[in-house]
Length: 310
Image 1 (cartoon, helix red, strand yellow):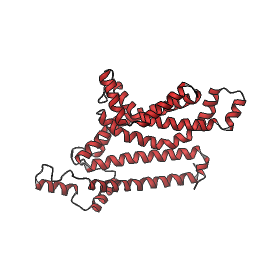
Image 2: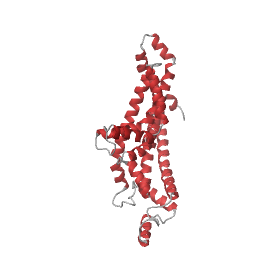
Image 3: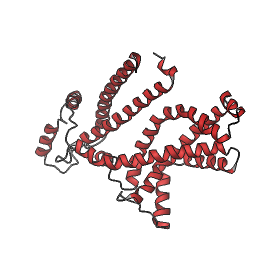
Image 4: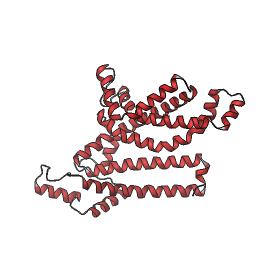
């Protein structure tokens, strides 16, 4: 990379760090707006014990001091200890739930990317046929209905009506099928429409007519020329795609009783476990921001026009 590219990387890293600091502050502020707390009056605690706990965790301090103390610990790499489960650190909770969540989202991402490319290229290759019409209609259906609909429907059909797939936990390969399908439904529809539009736009370019004039067949033109020039929309959508998968996994993990980060986050919200909530928020935030930064760098390397921008 040249000097301009390194400057861009430094700028993105600075934006990442400042954004995480802002995210931690905003999360602290929003938590204080929520009713209740880990040691509020509704908790079955002796008043003296409650006061000791509030002093220990600093919840009786003013908001600014709490934020500054947390940011100082964050700089040291310390995400803190769970308020409700003091025998476990936030880092341990994240590391324990990360494997299930990472595998679930990785499988969904593979299904979305490869499935979308297969359906989009197939629809372009067989334009005007029943296949293209079926793909278009299926994508409309998938986009129209949320995961909250697909999850229970798949559970009923495959888990109870036909009784051929398990519907809870992730104890084997077959356990991933329904959660992955539920998580992939809407993202794959969005990506198919995006790729199909990009392929159709490239199909009308002059280089396609030139390739056909040279005697190349429709398949060779599609896979050797059109598909190769249709990656930019995918890279631009990669960031929102990851956001959609990670945010959707919260609901999917709840529906299928997956012991992952989404379940931990929902449990922490119910318990008002501030340290776990903020830790998970920062983890997800840093993951998404880092992914967006990497895809931005890939787009700059793939498109010379972006490298020329200040």
